[in-house]
Each structure stands twice: as C-alpha cells, then as structure tokens.
Image (cartoon, rainbow, N blue to C red; front, top):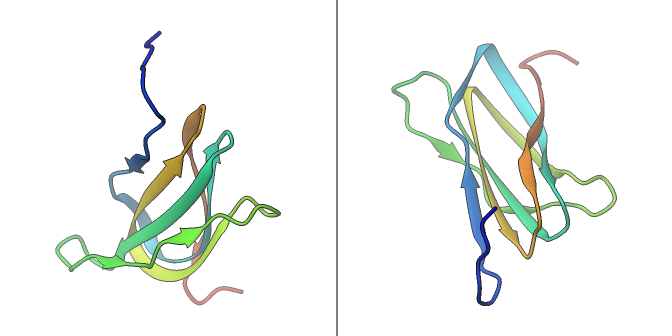
Length: 101
C-alpha cells in the first residue's frame, strides 16, 4: 500500500488504442471509478496511421454514470480526468458496428 500526503490532486488516466475488427460508433463511456468528479474524452482513428480525432471533454452524468459521445473509428482510446476519487478500475465503452441499429 502507498500513502500519499497533501491535498488531493487531479488524476489523468489514459488507455492505449484498442483495435476493433471493424469501424465502431462510440455512443458513451462509463468509467469504473468510485466517487469523484469525472470527465471523459474519446480519441478515435480509422486506420493506424490516420490522425487522432479527439472529442471534447464530457462530464459523466450522475444518473447513468456515463459520458455520452458520437465518435466513430476503428481504433479507440479513452482519457479520463478524475478529482477526489478512491479507486479507478477501468472503462466500459458503448460501441457498436457503424451502420447498425
């Protein structure tokens, strides 16, 4: 266990790129975080060498626990800013193949 002294600081958590088998439409991201104020940004790209498309930062809604997006790509990365939290485990992305209902 690690003990840190001082005032709480903002944490920035960032995943690597996850490659889907086909293009996906990302509708939302649910950070698996205990408490704290959380913002999420989704980064996507169509091909590995394409430039990264970053969404604006979105706050996580308290009712759904999800930040909502409409971002499309084959590669997905998630960035999260968290204030005053206890535990951060990961993310759940609501992603569906592009063109599906």
